[in-house]
Structures are given as structure tokens and as C-alpha cells.
Image 1 (cartoon, rainbow, N blue to C red):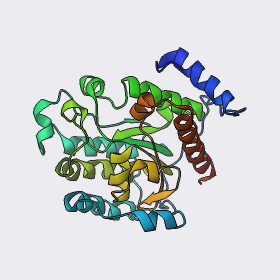
Image 2: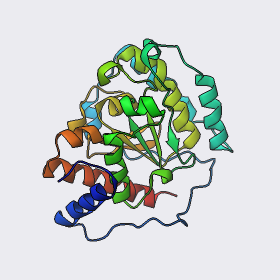
Image 3: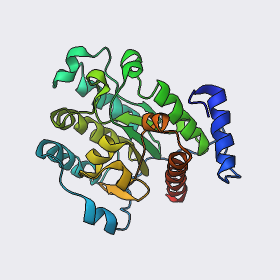
Length: 268
């Protein structure tokens, strides 16, 4: 199966879904309902024994950044205008020089999508295409993510997409703890502004940051976890899926996405 995005990639993805037994897909329309802002915080999912037994604290700076976001989701009042709140967060970020990643960046990659999205996708950091365009997930991995979103009956503009860091790491390496500690609070503020019903964590760095754990994505994916009361489904990053495009990995990602969509549909 081709890894290319665009119409041919979508056709092949749909063909694959048929191969594994999927017979019905949600079809988005222009009348897709949007969530209105609510003062009620998202309900925490039931505790996950697997998560409790396997999670361990991350490095202290990263753990400190994670914990700093928890009060945000516990606030009594949701933003009346999430779009305006996101603009405020972006203005506060400014032309950031808070960590060393600013030295080689072209553009800050803040986030994109519906400010009132029920479903939020979070990756690790921008790549070369994202750095050039200033938008998350626009390269080959981004095209694959678009296919994944389409497969569950949504459009890119129906969800919100962001990363745990806003500047591209050299050679696309994983973000370092000090970089995550410096940048992730802006992501946590984005989450608090959007108040998604479900978060899909794409890859290990995103999952570890949100869940305050050192457990890898292979063990985390496929089970529900929680960030500040918001259900989190970790799954493989689209870039990994492109590298290891096996039937087993495709099936796992599809099951994770189906679970996320079902939880979104069941949310108030």
C-alpha cells in the first residue's frame, strides 16, 4: 500500500479498512454539530489498573510542567470564547526565545483547528515541513494523519492539532526534558481553552508528557488514560506508521481511532 497522502492515499486507506472488516464509516457533512462551550469540566474516566501499575514519574522538570497544568482543567468557568483565549495564549508565547530550540527555527508552530473541537490530536514537535509552513502535521506524517481523521468520519477542520513543543528539534530528534518543561505549559493552556472531550496522543513523547510516565507507547496504546480529567487514547505517531506500515500496526491504530471516535460520540 502506498504511503502517499492525497486522494490516492485516502482511497487506499479506505480499501484497507474494508480488508480488515470495516463496512461502515461516518460521513462528515457541513452540518456537523459543534460543541458549545460549557462550564462543566470533562468527566474523568474510570481508573485504569494497567496505567496505575506501569506509570512512573518522568524527569523532574517535565513532571513539574505536567503538574502545573492540572489546576487549569479544574477551573469552574470555561472560556466564553475559546478562539480568543487561544489568540491570547499565542500572544503570550510571542516570538519565543525561552529555550534553545528557537535558535534554528523558521516558524513557531502553535496549533490549528476548531477552537471548540471535541477531539484533539497531540504530537511531539514540528518537522521540516511544519517549521517551513508554521502549521502542525503538514508533511508526509500530516497527510497520513489527515487520512486517519477522514477514516473516522471527521475533517481536519473539525479537530484541533498541536504538539508538546512549538519549535522543530534539530534533525527531528525527540524533545529534551528541559525543552518540554519550558514549552508544554503553552500546550496545557491550549487544552484548557479548547476543553476537548477526548485527546489522542500521537507517539511516546506526547503520551509520556500528558500522562506523566516513562512507559512507552507500545504498552500505553489501546487503553484509556486521563489527563486532568480528559480521556486520553495513546496511539502510534503517523510517522512511525509510515515507517512500519504493517497490517498489525494499521489495525492497532484503527482500533485506537475507533475507540476515540466512539468516546467522542458518547460525550455530552
